[in-house]
Image (tube, rainbow, N blue to C red; front, side, top):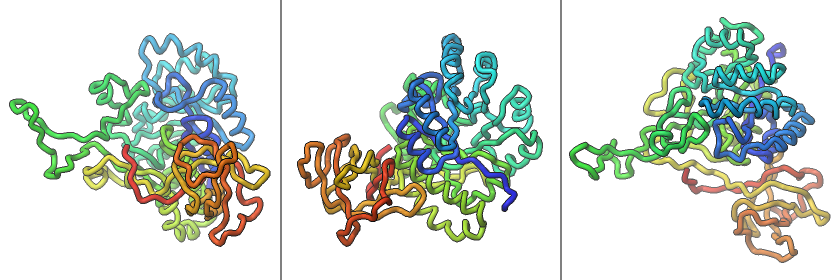
Length: 425
């Protein structure tokens, strides 16, 4: 175990605040999207100035930043890409992710020193494809979602040692082959391959016979209908040894559209699990139940291992609902601690005086607390905080009414509260 190469934990960031969160909670690298040419157009995404701030914050903490430029470009897109590459080439990005061969060639021309990774969208399913991209100058290739760990191991054995393999470890699964989906463009006019997916795979479907318009027949005998394309979420928290044995270097978490609570929960849990395994397999195995509990502390759709141990079957789909499981509610993150010892935050969801909450420490165990007092920015006491976005000053105690130990709570930490509700998709 001592000689094992350290793997990379790669987290998503839809905006600057989420990048800070990913870095604080344990990412080795973060991938982001700009405001053009990425596949998550509905995320907040990064302006050039935000990219600079994000890169500076990450690099100060030893974390890398990768930018997605992974659309399948049309002629009109190509015209703007050289200018975009000139804008980003000196920001300090550690790599760009690309799918389109034409965009790849433009990157080589306008950013010759930039490291290039090949996106999963490029359908990277065999070792000759990996070797092709290596000969073209790529440093890393992201595996297609449809590969098993056995196939990835075979790829690793047939490619150069310095070509890195990146593969998804956790997050939402796309029903379409390597994410190349036409449903959204056909049904809504919004092209998934240009970052505008409306997620029609999560909709409820029925069958209509040609001569009986308006007569909807459920695909299954169930009065709730059926969500026939609705996959469970990928989760490989129990299979880190197998991922490493397959030759995967970068463990990628899906979710540039996800909340900071999601990013914090998966970053901290996978960081702990990876570090535990690299220290001792026995330690890692002894904490599986703990990892599974912590990884469920954010929204998810039940879990699957995807294609890694063979082709998925009916057990890997969710047929009766498209809602998330939501075990915790995100209350906000600490902006600062004021002179009176109150935490300052911009509230995200409702909570009340007397509620028992948790503070998510960056590396240590969660800190249990009770909301003793809530004040608005004018000093007015409030029995509850019902309005998202409001600036609040909150006094916390432990469950016995004592002040929290000095130094255990700090800026950037997230606050969460248990919930037993479901959150619609």
